Image (tube, rainbow, N blue to C red; front, side, top):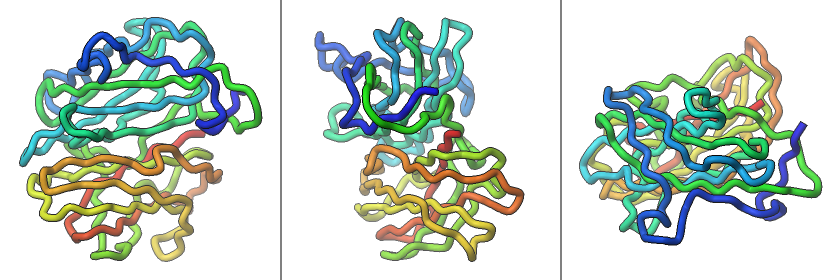
Amino acid sequence: MPLWIPPNALGKTESNVAVTSDATRKGTTITAGATAHTKGAWVQLLAATDEDTYGITVRVRDVHTAATVTSYLLDIGSGPAASEVVVIEDLDCDAAPAGSEVSARSYFFPGFIPKGERVAARAQSLIVSDVSTVGIWLHQAAEGWGMEVPSLWERLGAVTASHGVSVTPALNAFGSWTAILDPITKPYRWWHVGFDRLADTTILVNTQVMIELGLGDTAAAVSTIGMWEFAKNSAEIISGPWPAGPVYAPAVADTALGVYARIAAGGVEPRGVLVYAGE
């Protein structure tokens, strides 16, 4: 079974970004489906990987439009054309900054893609045929210690109109725990989080947003397993998360055990949360 190595211990990287222009340095254009909230066609990012891959950095730009709902979910997959298999499911890219803005939505996921494999992406969005620009970096040829990596990052929580589960923050404090999936159905070991605005087109304050994930039998008995931070501003731009990577917290599939989220922010408007889990 492939092992995970922390990003700073990984070997060479391989990327779809190219030096020839500002546009190619941002990555590859991904067009969402021609029907709202429906996945578009797979678009090739890399024809064949140079080495075995043990981790994937994904950077997304060019989704944001001011005062507009831009719900946008991205899949990363691998395999031959027309036979792609999802590796990262429904990555939340709402309001990813435009290329002219010095920021991005950026995530790191441990994951294994074998040498010689094709890598592709596809997307769905509220706006028909909306586009993003996607750059990936594959962390390859790793040596050293590590942990087993997932072969698939599953999205947990119901997707409504291409955004996440509604979670209400408290003002400068964590709000109540909200169930994302209860019970969990598999023995997940890895956890990550996505964040969006739901359908809000008028973010009132510039603020850092802190999201905690936890596991518990009920909302009154949750133990925190990780915390991430995102930033949003009054131009409806979202950046983050920080840290970019996941947490490792093995859980047993149990009819009583669920995964929960809560938010602290500079306002109390509901926001969307998706959870990504790997076995």
